[in-house]
Image (tube, rainbow, N blue to C red):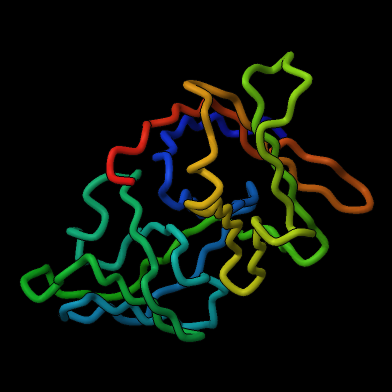
Length: 195
């Protein structure tokens, strides 16, 4: 697995929090039975889906073409039941009526139940000094297997002590069988003004 490379700014004295979702390469296709002309838009599937809240997905076919103007148009599930998906960002009142058919398509979420996570920040890749360390064991990284999220939180009381201008970080996910590099990138510290 190749890690995602994402660069961030950390605002000194402010809480840094980022949430990530780990998708597998397996595609899931669930048939649609209805799409409401409503605000927000609600999609009903013919069979239960496993789409978590906050997950990205596509709509393909079935009319209401405004939901898929291109093959790469993604939506975010803002509420779900076993057979409903709500897209809060979409008002479909004036959209073309749903006819029949179509699917919702998404990448199967990875089961996080066996994983733990750890993170280090250093001034450079070769630096022997760890500026900051976080893990699921000590609480700054949380893995939520219901919503399939990985959340990193660095409190403002911690970022206030940072004095680097730039640094690098990496996040690893691991279990008894694997250690996987999940995220890497550069960090830029923005000095605190109000303090």
